[in-house]
Amino acid sequence: MIEYVKDRLPRRVRRSLALTRIASTSLKHRHKGYRDFMLSSYSAVNRLDRSYGRPVHLSLEPTNICNLRCPVCETGNGTLGRVKRHLGIDQFKHVIDSMQDHVNVLYFYFVGEPFLAMDSYEMIEHATRKQIWVDTCTNGEFVDAKNLLDSGLGRICFQLGGMTQETHETYRVGGVLEKAVANLAACVEEKRRRPDCKTQIKTGFIVMKHNEHEVDEFVRFAKDIGVDAYEVVDPAVRTLEEGDQFLTSQDKYWYYDREAFNQGILRPKSPSNHYCEWIYYTTTIQVNGDVVPCCRDPRGVHVLGNVFEQDFVSEIWNGELYRDFRHMVAHNQKDTGICDLCSGYTAPDINRHDPVQILPAIQPVAPRLEPEPAGVLV
Ligand SMILES: C[S@@+](CC[C@H](N)C(=O)[O-])C[C@H]1O[C@@H](n2cnc3c(N)ncnc32)[C@H](O)[C@@H]1O
Ligand code: SF4
Image (cartoon, rainbow, N blue to C red; front, side, top):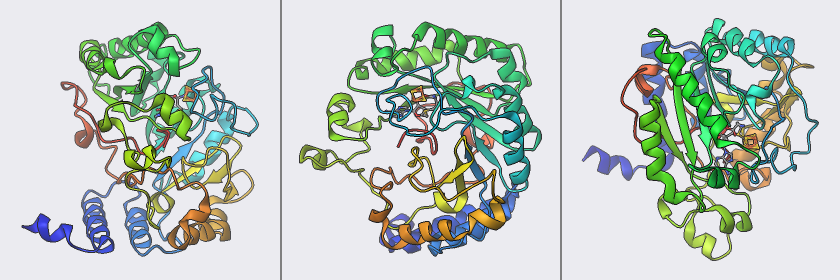
């Protein structure tokens, strides 16, 4: 009955109720950043130009360089249009130290392979010491199990492109499945040797037309290898042509509107509608320090400031460019040019990283998890 009534409430009221519930949970648990989270909830529901809370989630790009050439990824297909480089350890520390009071979760990747960065493990360790839970995903080819678990990382996801070398490299172009799997197995093994280790080890399968017949095999693989969780990742594409090439025959892996697709329009099933939580709770920083609204802006179309030249909280977060961007989303979202293909997933809540709520550390592997918020190409 309550659900029936809830479903008939206007969308804005439903959002307010949901965010009030999430914000009050955060008040109860008082996770780091909970005050900011509640203030941002208020700002998001009212679609204000300012966010009264500071970001609790941060995506920071350790590198925009990669060893692979995945055809939909802007780094992989060579259309990124940004100077290729790694983040320096001092630059990383500068960002983390200036945001440590409010950042609760660090997404340690954007477009590039995080474990190609010069000092990835030291970076993760530094953030962890500042009470920031670190989440990352990887193509798996450069991960060192011992260094990884020494770093105190919160979670890692090894994303595979297939169960055979042939299917894997169809999308993970230049990738070697055996290498990724060997490193994943080494991490699981290393974790077994450390009963107190809290790092969650996860594997993902980017399901596409050429590998959808392998999903059951992937699930068996994930269970056999002993990961904490696995996930089948819905494929993202940028164009109808890529859709024809990569989207699956089965509807269940589509977050695009299939009927519209058949009529020549690429759009998500539930597009954003002048409402976005990401721009109130999270921020994304590219390797050169440029701040962009979210993971939908890999090329840096909307640079809202630079953390190596400005103070993030006093000059960028509610500066004119950020305020204009929030205003545009609330009133003329089409004009942003980056929201059209956004999946419209809601931003993760502040408790997301709590291992008890995601998966107890060592447990039978979970079924399909909810879609990843950041970094998953959307
Ligand atoms: C750009 S990658 C960067 C991290 C790392 N290099 C990797 O590939 O895992 C960020 C995420 O996007 C995912 N991804 C890449 N191409 C995708 C696609 N076409 N559809 C869905 N997810 C994709 C990756 O698996 C990864 O989880
Ligand atoms: S998706 Fe990841 S592995 Fe593939 S090219 Fe992009 S950054 Fe590299």
